[in-house]
Length: 390
Image (tube, rainbow, N blue to C red; front, side, top):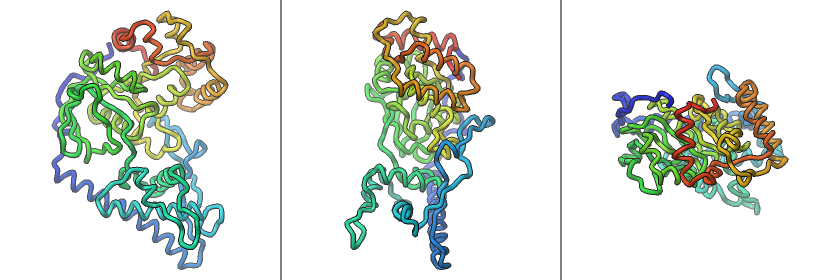
């Protein structure tokens, strides 16, 4: 079994901050956020008064403007930007949407209230006077604008008082304080603690932790098996799931559990390009949100499985094979070419082995051995042998 931290309560330096300290922290953060929004709009105002085409410099959120930092082991955003101008017919709509969203976020911060992504869409939705044109055709337009605004202002979604729906669950040997309420994650029944979108220290604090590590699984169905089998109790850990690709709240919480409590993070994911990509996002960050990697990525996270060699190693039946389609193969080769995977021989071997097999496998495939095989044999084996990919 890998060496793990000695069980203990949260160190004194990590004790729950007082309500007054949290309030001061929020006010300081909110003042900085409002100032950033005001500075942005004043820049637009100065351009207009000087007779120039008002524009907003938006950092480019793409692979071409993303680099992998070998030193920090995370994805970082480059310096490339694109200008969004008011008097450019191809850009005017997005310019208007960006300023409209900035105004809505300023209102939220000043009011001390929060809204969901869906709520922000409706708050900013109306027909432009004198036309039948709506400000947003749908939420698929408003969400990317909010992300553009985040990176432009250098203020994360949480700092703009916007949250996403809950999309993750946790159970295990830890007690947290969520908005002043003490929640013992050892006593959460079959449903677990719903990980909120905003998990910053002024909202969620760690009160008592006895766990040795965090096991993150890809899907709720697998998480339910681990929870029902009380794996977290038998192996003294925290068990999380992200419903597929984990939300920002889940990723941020994993980072905090690792950094603040010193807990190793192990990822139990499917043997397919999408499981590999989810691991990449947890470990290095995502390309479109590279500006957030320093707060969300967990560079020390380990990939525990499922592995391509497990088909033979555990004598699985042909029934578990899911043939790789052309999209799977293309995605696998694309992932293998990522700089953060390209130079790792063990990952090149893993991806090539999967492609050579010609099929992918889900964690649930281990059920063909026994209902609790994954909790009683597979994961304990991987932990004991320290058999994972980094």
